[in-house]
Length: 254
Ligand code: COA
Image (cartoon, rainbow, N blue to C red; front, top):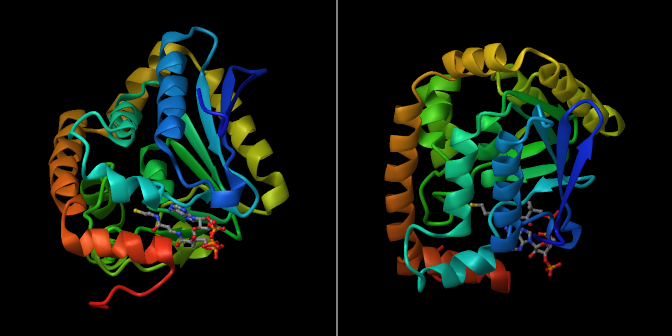
């Protein structure tokens, strides 16, 4: 468990997973990833949970992986990082997932939504995937899922140039089901989650698998990315970028 992730099972079979580290814009620590993974595993095992909704704090859905963790992870063995274990679980979760994005959604804050079945955002949402800028590579199968969702050229712009984009652009690209005022967002996402949870379970899961397509390809992409990500994490280039963010100074090479 993590004090920075609140898990509530609501009426209607909806499990609401709320990231709660506002002082760091909901940047994810290992303990937070573990809590999110546990919430998904339990949802899949539970008869009572029919949908999971991810939410953040006002103005901060999730600022991505905690960069201090990136800076120290190079010393640790590959394969059992909490982030990777969470991402693997995210890709294989059978329970439908809904995202409610308000404010910043950076890195995994954006790529997580590619695995959700329904995605809603407030008009204040700002998405960004600055992996390459940080000396890293895309993760969470985004290098596979995003080009298929929005086309290769636009995906290249977002993944290589780390372009920030707002809710209206995300909706136009087909990355959102709806944009609404912040104060309606979580309520709407929960209501949609409850609609999913009320559907016949086996028909829902079978249909969901058909819509999502080739699961093996997603998992293969995720694994290839994870290996490249791990190599990149250890490069002096990436380490300099992490230190620059943590020190709030520009890297010497920039
Ligand atoms: N890791 C660690 N700390 C983070 C963080 C992250 N990913 N994102 C934000 N924080 C911290 C900041 O260092 C700051 O801490 P401080 O108050 O102790 O200085 C606090 O959260 C607030 O962030 P701040 O940058 O002041 O807020 P902002 O509204 O100006 O900007 C972001 C928000 C998310 C746009 C900006 O913080 C950012 O770009 N963060 C890095 C995102 C990132 O690259 N994530 C990894 C993706 S792979």
